[in-house]
Length: 265
Image 1 (cartoon, rainbow, N blue to C red):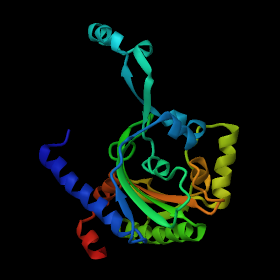
Image 2 (image 1 turned 90 degrees about the vertical axis):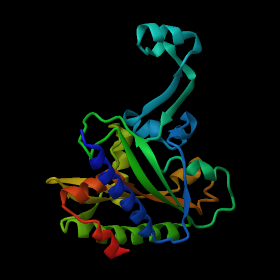
Image 3 (image 1 turned 60 degrees about the horizontal axis):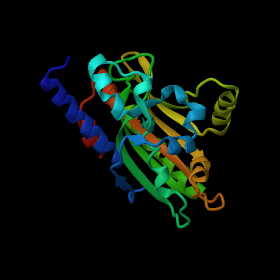
Image 4 (image 1 turned 180 degrees about the vertical axis):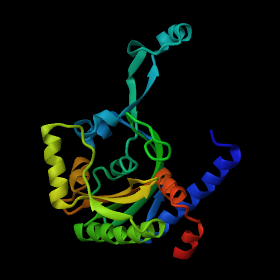
C-alpha cells in the first residue's frame, strides 16, 4: 500500500492532468457541470446499456426495512432482502448523466459540456492504475449540428495526439470498437463502428503494454433520439473521455515530468 506522501504526490498529478485536459477542449465556451455517479434504470435503458454492456453494470440498491435486523444478525446480503423499488445503477460511463438533461428540448444550439465523475464497471481482472472497478473519467460532450460535433471531435483528437506524443512517441490514435457483450446484434454494431469510424482510441504504452487512455466517440443521433432532442435529426452528439488514472499511469511509467503540462499550456 502507498504511503500518505505517495498518495499526496499522486493526487497532485491527478488534479494537474484533469485541469490540463480542459485546456485541450477546442470549444472554449464549454460549460462545466458537477454530476453524480448514479443513474436510473430508465435512463440506462434509453442509453442502450442493457442491450450492449450489461456485464459491466453494478447495482445500487437498499435493503428492505423489514430485513435490516436479519442482515445485522447474518452479516449477509442476499437477493431476497434487496428492495427492488430502490434499484438504480452506478454509472458505467461519465457521459451518460448528461444526455437526460436535454430531454424533450427543442431549443438546442451547439454546446459543449464537461463533467468529471467517478465511474464504476464490473471487471473480471484488476490491474493497478489501468483496469479498475472504480475510476475517474473527465468527459467532454458535444451536442449540436453534425458539422459542429464532427469538427470538435477531430480537432480534439489532434490536440490529444500531440499531448500523448509528448508522453511517449509511440502513442497513436486508432479506430476502435466498444467492448459490447457478444451477441449477433452487437457484432453488427462493432462492424458499424469500424466502417463509419465512430470510435477512436488514444493508445499509450504503459509498462510495456498498449493501453487505451482516451476514447473519441461520434454517436450520431442515438442519444438525441433516445431522449427526444434530435429536432428532426438536426441534433447529434459526440464525446471524448479521459481515464484520468490511466493518464497518471502513462505519466509515471514513461518517467514524465509535470513540466510537460506547463510547456503546452
